[in-house]
Amino acid sequence: MTRWLPHALIGLSALLILHHLAEFAAVLREGVGKAALTLDFRTYMCGAADLRGPYDICHNGEFVSGFVYPPPSLAYFHTLSRLPIDTAFLIHTALCVAMLAMATRMVVRMAPRAPGEAPRPTATTIAAVLAALAIAPVGTSLAAGQVNILLMGAAVAGMAFAATDRPARAGIAIALGFWLKIYPGLVPALFLTPRKWRAAVATVIASAVIAAIGLGWAAPELYRQYFLELLPHAQGYTMPGVAQSLAGIAAHVEAGGGAPIQHFVPIPHGVQLAAKGLLAIGILLAMAHGLATREARPLDSLNLLLCASLVAAPNAWGYHYALIFPAILSALLGALARPGSLRTPLVLACWLALVVPAWTDPPAVLGQIAAFNVPFRARYALVALVLCGLILVDARKTARTIAAPRQAG
Image (cartoon, rainbow, N blue to C red; front, side):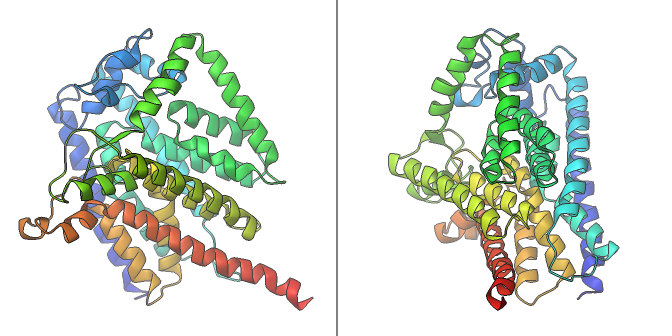
């Protein structure tokens, strides 16, 4: 298996990446202004074109579906909106590809190794990288003009800079990601240790500076509207069978577990509390992971945080799972470099679940069975939970390895 598996994975991943390229080419042929996949990109270009009321227009019939990014992000989106939409789309894609390349390099460098482990074979690294790039959320994010790859890159860069004692760069990376979309705002929780407190301070300062600069094009009212109206409202709704999250799964079960519901429905109060509790647990586990491993596995701490945040978010669609890229890449690197009878098949099963696009329907006969249909529709969230479990198992082993010399002494 050690010899043939990486090469087989390279071949299959190359075919899947070609599918990404074909999907992207189809969007360009159809036209970004008309393609079904780029509906959200058109909505963001529409909303950002009006600096005075971006949150009040271009809703596509539902308030949650309009422009949903923080006020400082208008500098980026408004600039793109002034260009022909096909040009704006290509510029945005080029930036995402560059960010993906940077994040890939950082993840490969940060990916944990066992003590005394030999350098990974080149074929293993290539196989893991291509396989991670082949997952459907990456291809969908690129073809749809989403920003999830930029958020993922900001989180990985922030963690990598903090781990190498470059706090200013870490703070700027996280602040830029936060003011583009709020997901990277969770990462500074991992900086709250004696060796990374400077990165936490730098993040706060950089975030405040960007917010102040943002007042040059975004009125203070937009900050109030975003944080006090839009976000609280969006947190209360989800799409059953579409959202890859705890709220989406619960709403799907409540709706009978059948076909996805293509509109927003209220999330029951108990499920909202459970999702918030899950997020709090994920943050605490990620922080505890850093302490237990003495920050020897910072990438795993970040992956644990990202996976938990995806499952806890009420509206984590399939393309949001581009944020899982560093977690699946790290898992593949370990599973291919150290093949095991249990872990390697489990990681490959997770990867196979991620290469199937989120909107794929199961066979009609099976789709009528809620006990099958619900897990199938929620497979990305289940993959995130499995990867969290593997990270925690590795953390326990690392903590024991660290504690062994102290006990011997």
